[in-house]
Length: 333
Image (cartoon, rainbow, N blue to C red; front, side, top):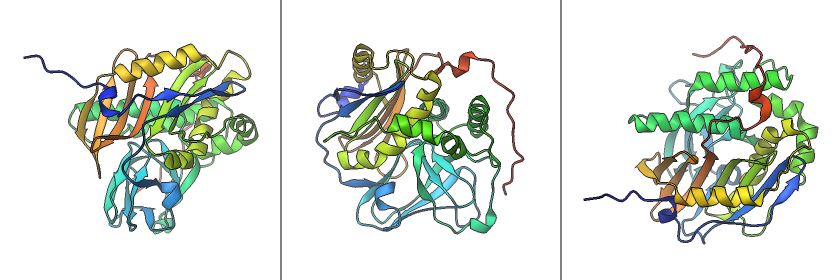
């Protein structure tokens, strides 16, 4: 008997669709619109300081684990690639996690501040950052996490690969950081990034975004609730802008044909489901055209991240000879 492998379309009440793009310099962002949501939940940015806390582990901090405490009556979504800052060192989420009302969950994270481990700030709450990890870093983390899931392990990124990528990106952009922080790249290029970000709008009912840097698809992000995506929009677009920045104003960024083709291939992608963390099921997919991850709760696709699966660079920086990584001394327990 032939067993049918479900496609991404099977997780959607109706297919995703694209709106007209916003174009700002080398970055084009097509708004994504999805089916009406059913499950109630909020983002970390919407709930931080109002009953949702992200903290170091109580029994002793771990570079690659944090605790999310949800003391509210509504589920909260921690988004893949989302950065949380503060406490002993800044981190990004390795996978999307939906934390139930009243629950406490340990979530996998990656450090993006290699040179800081401040034990005096152990009890401090993390705050949502004004940026997310950039798509090239997120795609690398997604591949590592998927390989671990396929091997029957927890969905985690390769921490040393994350540090090397952040260090290389800093070197490529000529950014000096005392703590090797990804955030320092964004701060150093703040004005240039803000000029790009300012041209990318948020549209009524928008549930996601398909970003093209220099005319090439780099990532699609989607959540089922428009108000949750609105809270994620600014940080995600900042990440998109960092990957677009090396292109200057060159290229033809608003390639509607490339965007539509990517979305069609995404809908056709065959998916596998695995035990998730918190509410819902972890969803993974990869073929010769698209790859990514998502989160399904009940019959609803709560979250989706997708990348082109070719092995080419997402910016022209990878085509250049990369300078040696300037690594800081690591301070951790």
